[in-house]
Image (cartoon, rainbow, N blue to C red; front, side, top):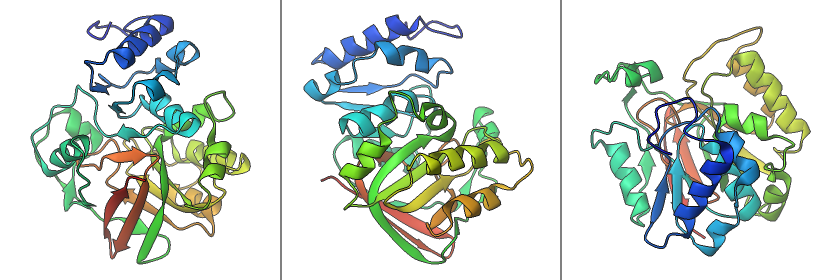
Length: 277
């Protein structure tokens, strides 16, 4: 159903069946999500998440595929990649090469970039990077280490308290490693972001948390409260970085859900390194 040009490529049950066929096919070495999908959550009740443990392979996507990537990692301890969808029009740049190196089994150090382009500029295939990259830190120069989990914030917020949550068990299993969260906010305004973060905090999602990594919001809209104030109020003593090279703006990092990682930040720039154990 992947090539159908419609709001839904197929019903949720059909898409879940096709996903399982790909997982079980030994000729398929990797599953790359075609694109984001507003209705992807419909396939979750029919999806056999455990089957990937019997047929291990990388599955990678960005944005809405968080519906699948996130529960695979938190509920079943399967590492997944938050990086690209197949529809991405690549130009063989450094961040794309880093992604390919990860897929081939290398572990490159991913370093912050000099300039970026906003999401709408990427859609319009604007080739120029107009905006200066400058990460922001709540604690100044910092090193953060822990086991990474996250994805598209808009999607994760809809999974709280559902059968696809599994976060409390995940962070309890890896509390000795410490947890690093990352969030890629597509279109939540600042008030929605604040209220969702409060809900996550009340649900215990930030227990054993050593740091929060936040990308640039694709469609920022501040309402009643600024994004920065929302972060400050919720995270309090948890160090956080924002405006990072994560998510919908190019260039961006490839992130491994479930992997140990170390992030080093100094004066607006930083680097990220994964450790597969």
